[in-house]
Length: 411
Image (cartoon, rainbow, N blue to C red; front, side, top):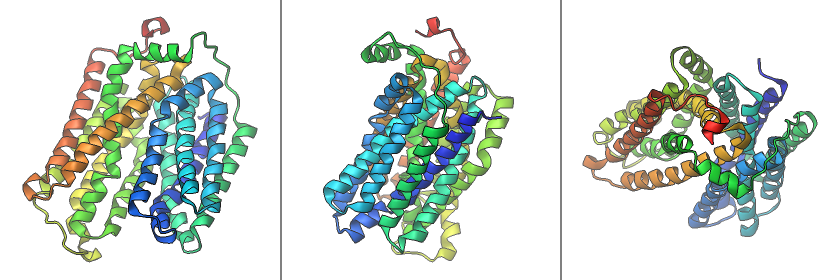
């Protein structure tokens, strides 16, 4: 049974995903169509959102340790009230950029803090807690775009205003109902705590393997949509990827975690999940050289015949995510220490962001190759990334490096 504070954060995650996905999927269309900005400007805006969030996770994690996760969560949510409110009230380039960066900074602030709060709230069964957290997030990610699409015919600014209202309700609920956790004293400086993390070899090796998870996860927005549109010639086919992924994420997350808890060690579950995410791209490595690129949009009736490799990959990929994510989150608390849990999360996400950028760049260039004989290359690369990440985590598990140790041993 989840503590009351954890239940509130589950609802909070649903609301965060709901508000975010009401707006962000439609932002590019709004900026390009309604406001008339160039494609280059839209690309820069979307890139700034990702960079400002992933690049500042370390700052957010450090704040969670120094301020306490409760204050940091509330600060991040309050910042998103202002960010989405700015979307609703401005159409200038400066206003749009400011709002977008603020959304990213807010995510960088509250995301590590929420995970730190949940980890400190749950001494045991942390993977199950993170599983429930993922289910609520996926539910918000499913409902958000549907609600946004329904309101888009009225006005994008209305969507942004409703999203701001959602974050206002969340912030108020946290101020009123989210309990303070016992304050942890820090006798070292911020730089000193960073140095302690970077001297933790177990953490560094685990991060090297675990960052493959995020490098692969980002292909949900790159390789899979691009391949779906390539074979069908229709951008609407991309929705199939997200529907399959979200529905399976909601339906399978808890059962997969429960089965893994019974049958596998946490390290084995995390390693197997990352390996499964990589192996999921094997069907595309086989089918991509065979299936032609659509010269024009093909009818919806023929999509399933063309999309079955993408659907199969997405399904296996989603099972891998459901298996890997909760145990990676749990193990970060094992290879780190509670006193600096936010800082450990921050460093992990920062390294993962760099890995995602590198892998995304390589895969993106490979996806640009049009010769049929080379179409398998990006998917072979992704399968290899999964295999390497899985092997690192599996080897740490074999050597018992993913077991609880004393704080002294960790340091």
